[in-house]
Image (cartoon, rainbow, N blue to C red; front, side):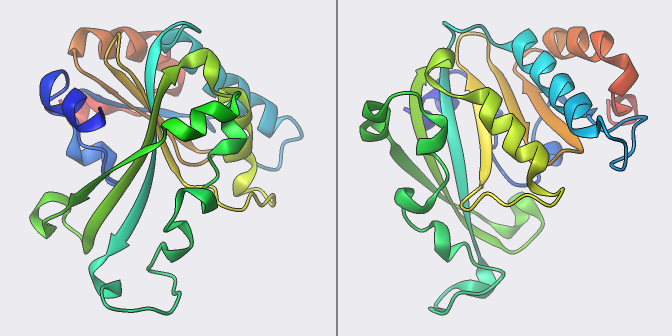
Length: 213
């Protein structure tokens, strides 16, 4: 399903760790703009900004593909011990923080995996393989608020075992939402007109992408 969607609907989409440089019609929004992590309301401000953007891009009944990436780096090939450069902990869907964000246990049975072997020329680093674990569902089937909250808190002293790299693809409108840290959101759009609308609405926290386009 994921591979077919990319091939047929969103041919330019690349779900790579260097998301910002791998895709066209990319937009970065700085969630921590004009506020310090030492401020008492920092988490609330960042969370509210992230939720606001999400709700501008997704409705509860929109069809989505919820994707969780697991990366294997070339330095780790043929190595069996756990190390910092390997995501060996995430080698099975049971160890990924996924079920916590699904409202219905039945959705776990729908999880698939699509694997990509990557050329260094594609990413400019030593990434060798990406396993895309994914489930097709509705927005209302995932606890996106909890996901955003935990990503916001992860680097602020909280720990959520199994937290990974998440992409939420709106297959009706062809948007992709990715939040890795409390600092920013990565967005990719099939159509540049949609990117410009969001860029203009969130001009106060928009990272200056005009230098790239």
